[in-house]
Every structure is written in structure tokens, then in C-alpha cells.
Length: 246
Ligand code: SAM
Image (cartoon, rainbow, N blue to C red; front, side, top):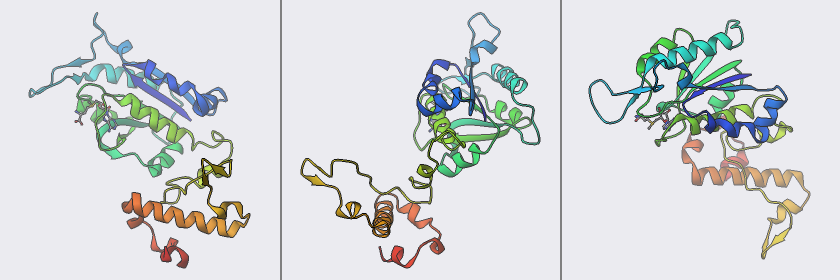
């Protein structure tokens, strides 16, 4: 998979050199490059923003540097074979980023992330980009960040870890939160008793069936307590009789 990020703060994305995503890049599983939007300005001050039409507080990102940067990304990207690249535009006004969206994007060949700042990017860039990309305005959640970079760090990590080969043991992707619409069960490690707190006895039983049932019950209870919206969205056909008794 190829990932391009365009930002006025490319240094923000340095964290993508670390840990599993950094390793995946070094192994060639992910090809990631970060471009500085200011490289695509033409004035002495490398200006990327201007005042908003219609008035109001704050500044808006100018369209032309974005068009230049995105055209350059397209020119350097993999030759399009049927699939258009996806342009993810982080925005609190976008579709909410979920594990399902991460899964979908992990199957794409070329992702491009456009990090907004100030009051956001001139809307005409989004219209223009729709002729070249599949455009996805995407929100990390219902709150406002100062810029798209932090959202991109989160999204690239969530997407990247689903790319085959990035996580050593693919089993760990099957059992975690949101894989099956539920939150993960609580986890424990050694020692068996820590500061007078024993691990639940069932986990020491060696009985796989009982452990699996206990974990499933805890998943259901935890999800009902913390995220009733997820329980309401479950497919009733995916629940067995013991699930319904929880
Ligand atoms: N004026 C915009 C609005 O109210 O929708 C908010 C602009 S915000 C200060 C600047 C940039 O931060 C946005 O263009 C976007 O790139 C990013 N951003 C802020 N909150 C975000 C969120 N919840 N999810 C994704 N990106 C976000």
C-alpha cells in the first residue's frame, strides 16, 4: 500500500517512523511519504491561507497550493489500474472513522491524506479532487482538533495494522475490540495475585470452553455498560442462547 500525507507540519508525522508502522515501512509493506504543502506555494512568504469570503473568524487554506500538491502526489503515485486513489480529508464535519472504515481503506492501493489547518481547506478543492480521487471527508470523532495531523496519525495506525503482514500474529486482530461489534474482554498477565488482587479463577482453570464463555460474557456486559449503541447495532442472529442470557 502507498500512503501520501500533505501537511504544513510534516514533522508531526515523524511518529510514523516508529514501532510497527515504522517497521512495516522498512519492510516495504507500507510505502509512506509526507509532503510539505508550503513547497507548493509561489510567493516569498510561502502563504497557504487567506481570509474567508463572507467574513468571520479565522483563516481558510488557499486552493492552489493544494491542487499543486495533490497533482504532484498523483504524478508520483502508482499507475492507476481501475481503482482511483482515496483522498481522505480529515474534518470534524466528515463521516466518523470506525474500524469498518479502517478495514475498507486497508484494502486500497493508494491513500492520500490532506491535513487541514485553520478553519479548513477551501471547499472547491474537495469538488476539484472528486474528478481525480475518491474523496472521503473523515472525522476522528465529535470534537475539534487544531489540525488534521493527529487525526492522520490515528487513522494511518488503525489502517496500517490491518494490512497483511504488519501485525506478526493476525489472530490478535480477530479478538480485539470492534472486530465483531463488541468491546474486548479484560486481559490479565502474571503474577496470578498482584497487590492482593487475584486474576479471575476461570483464567487459571485451563478449561478452554469456560474461558471462552467467560470472555464472551464479559465482552457483552462491558459493551452494554460502556457502549449500548454497539449492542443495539448487533445482528440478533449472531447471538447464541447464552449470549441472550447475559
Ligand atoms: N472550522 C472547522 C469546523 O468547524 O468544522 C474546524 C477546523 S479545525 C480547527 C482545523 C483542521 O483540523 C480541520 O481542517 C481538520 O483537518 C482537523 N480536524 C479538526 N477536528 C477534527 C476531527 N474531529 N477529525 C478529523 N480532523 C479534524
